[in-house]
Image 1 (spheres, rainbow, N blue to C red):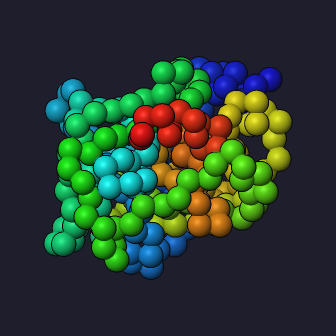
Image 2: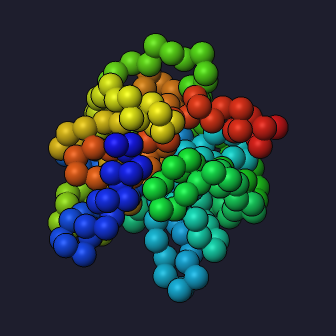
Length: 235
C-alpha cells in the first residue's frame, strides 16, 4: 500500500479518534539564536479572518519555499526571527505571487511543495541568508538530518513555540517514500503541526519540505525530484 493510500485511510479514522496532523518539533530543543538564518516564519491570513502559521525557508532574495498545503489568502513573511515575541530588527515582507505545484493533491498531500515570490527583496545579513537546495546529483544523502520550526513542542500543546526549536531526525529506507517523491523519518522526534513547510536539512542543504505526519512517520517532499520545476519558476 502506498504512503498516500495509507494517509487517506488514516484521515478517515479521524472521526474514530485517530490523529493526522500536518506540519511541530517534537522531542527537540531550542536552536541557537539565528544559527539557521534561512528559516522563515509564515503568518498566513485566512479567508475566515484568522491567522495561522507555517514554516518556510529562504532560497534567494525574493523566493521562499514552503508546503503547498500552507496556502492562504495572503502572507506576511518574517525573516531573521528567533523569538516570536521579539520583533525588533526582523524583516517583514508580503508575498506578491504563489506557485503551488500543479500536481498538489490536498487529499493525499502528494507534491506538497510551493514557492512564494516576495513583494520586495530580502536584505541579507548575519541573521538572514538563503540555503542551498539539494539537486538531482545529490545521491549520497546523509542519513542524519535536522528539522526546525516554531510549531508546538508536544502532542498536547495547541499553541506555537515562541522560540525556534530544532531536532535531529534520521532518514529511513522506504520504497513507498521513494515512489511518492518523498523522504520519510520515523520515531518520537520530528516535525508536526505548525512546522509544515520548513526544511529537512542534511549536510547544509535543504533536501525536503515538511509535509505531513501520521502515527510516528514523518513525510517530506523530496526537493531533488522537483529541481527542474523550481529552477523554471525562479528563473
